[in-house]
Structures are given as C-alpha cells and as structure tokens.
Length: 393
Ligand SMILES: [Zn+2]
Image (cartoon, rainbow, N blue to C red; front, side, top):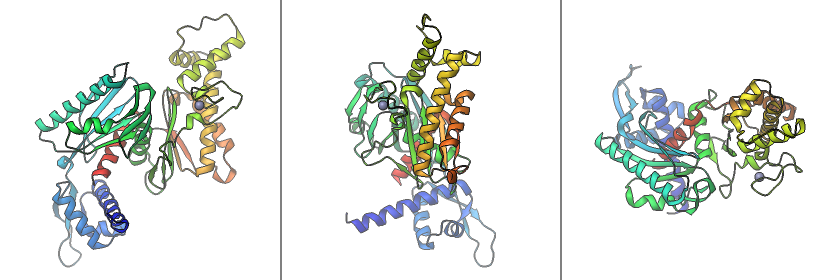
C-alpha cells in the first residue's frame, strides 16, 4: 500500500469512528447534523453512513421534521449489530465481558488465574474465550473482534506480551497462539492503556474537548500510568510509556524491583506501603511482630489512629502526588484519574492533592483535575472494547 493511500484509508477510518460515536451519543440524528457537528464533507458522511448501514452497525429510524424540501432520514445505532469479547487480565483473575457496539455488557464471566501462569494461564484465557464465543453463537450475536487487556510490556502491533512477570509470560505470542482458534481480529493491549482509554471515553465528566490530555494512574501491586495525549493513546517509542512507578522520588531511598533506588513503587505499591509501615513502626518500637501485616491492616489501622499506618499512607500519597504533579508540569494534562485501594483513602487523597497543588507551576494551578476513576475496575474492559471497535473500523 502506498503512503498516500494508507493515509486516506486512515482518515476514512477516523471518520467512521467519529460518526459511529456521534450516532451512538446523539441518536436519532440526520446526516446533515452529522456533517455540521463533525465538520466533514457531506460526501464523506454519505459514504461512511452507507458503509455503517451495510455492515448492520447503524440503521434508519424515521424522518426528521422538514425545514423545507425533503425530510432528512434519521439514523440510530444498531447495538446488536456487532459484539466484542473483551478480557481484562488482573493479577489473580480474568474478567470477560461480551459487549455490543453500544458498550452494553450482554454477558460476563470470570476465572481465577492459575498461580503458575505461563501455558496454564493461557489455557484458562483460551477456554474463557471459547466459552464466550459459543455463547455468542448460541444467542445469535455477531462477533466483530476479541480484545485482551494484559499487564506487562506489550507489543500491540505483533500481539506479543514481551514481559509480564506476574503472568509468567515472556516473549509470549498471545495473538498468534489464539488466532488459529478464532476467525475474528484479536487486539492485545497493555491493561493500564486500555483503562486510560475507557476512562477517557466513558468515565470522565469532562469528556470531550476539555479533556484531550489525561493520565490514568493505577496504584496497586505496582504503579503504572496510561496516557491519552491529544485525544489518542500514547504508548511511547517502544511501548514503554507510563512507567510512573519507576519515577524516582528519593534517589537515596529503598532499592526497587527494577534495580534503581527510591522509585515511586518503593513507597506507593502495596508492598511499598507495607515496607514503609515497617520502617515507621521500627522507629517507634523495634520489637513489634509484623508478620501477616498487609495493606488492609494498615488502612484499617490508620482509621483507628495507628500513627505508623497514617505515616505510611501519607508517604504513599505524597509520593504519588509529587510524581503526578511533575507529569502535569511537563505534559499540561487536563485530567488525572486514580484507581486502586489506597486512592479511596482520605489520608492518601489529602496528601496527594496537597503536594500536587504545591508542585505545579503557578500558571498550571487549577487547570488539571485529579479525581478517582469513575469506572473503577471496569475501565479496562470498556477501553479494550472501544479500541477493538476502532480497530475493526
Ligand atoms: Zn523502580
């Protein structure tokens, strides 16, 4: 394919996506209104809506009131015209949702993931997908594609999970291994990127022109970020963008799993908070029995006034707010969304918000909203569904 033709097809794809989103959001709508709202040529809208109608994704649903001349035909989304089987792999379990093109969830299942990971985990994913595909067939629900959001370093172009220690997948050709079993396109994407896109499209009340540049931050067993810049997902030159957990907060701090010292994860990941709690407790009294202390104990301890627990959570909030503030200064972000156990804790939140406001350059203060993720654990599934739809269009 020559470059000019490739660009033309890409532009047509973008028009199709924009038109489909608009029809979904503003059904019923006429072609004239689509043309005006999106600023596209009427011929582009005619061709695109004809394609969407031919594929069964959009249908005619009556006529608008005439303002003189022929009454314009109204269009609406045909939600049942296509479905996506979406999978989100967390550390311990798999969530699967079958979604129609209106992003309604019509079927779901979940599976515990085998601790050993590797091929056993792949088998669990495969069986869940086959079960969902069989359900779709029995229910006469056409499937347009399969989307999988996975932790680790992911090469979306090749569908290879380059490195996912928690899943014990290394240079794992996920898409190629699944492809012989399914006739649908298969999209593999980093889970935090998928969640960022889900939150961007469906979760943020500022969705639209106000939130073109945003970051989704997950604070859990690790700390990671997914970015939407200028309305598009940003994964960096080699897919490594978003390693917020390894932003250095304290160059002489504890050693991180990555080998560096004082990364954000050393104080804000679950293990990091537990370690910070141990250090804080040790300063108070060296003979505490700390076996069995986890994040939940620390969170509930903080609620009952445990000074060391409060200190550990404040330390995590401070580090997360500081790291985010520096990113906002660099990228001029409009919105930051946080997800994870700690992000629902008021001590954490107050500390993160205070330092964020303090480190922003004055002209950026008040320009960026930091808020909890509106979609929570569903952000990844919503995002991978949207990416899958865009891929097949
Ligand atoms: Zn690190």
